[in-house]
Image 1 (cartoon, rainbow, N blue to C red):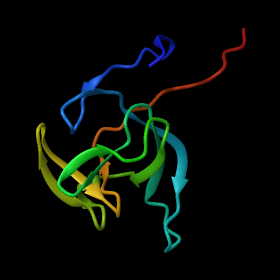
Image 2 (image 1 turned 45 degrees about the vertical axis):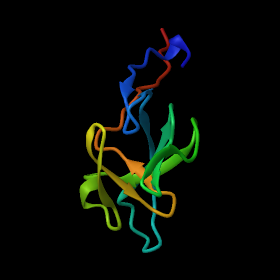
Image 3 (image 1 turned 90 degrees about the vertical axis):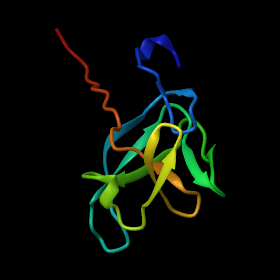
Length: 111
């Protein structure tokens, strides 16, 4: 991670030091035409839970989406007990859904 971003690391669902998922301002519309999800970008590993194993299924920089409200209530999400407690995964690659994605404020200031 470039120090320019001044991001805080944490221990991920696999039990290793990682960087967070950051929300974008983009709504992700599902097949029903509803916009209950938002897109985010993974600054670290884009983890998934497959075959009872946590692994980097997409890689840093991956763009994914999940519920804007509570991933525990996301249709199709499964609850998994991991090294750091309970987490949620969803989809064919078991994308790990986090309750606390991060936000980075970006703007230009003209003086």
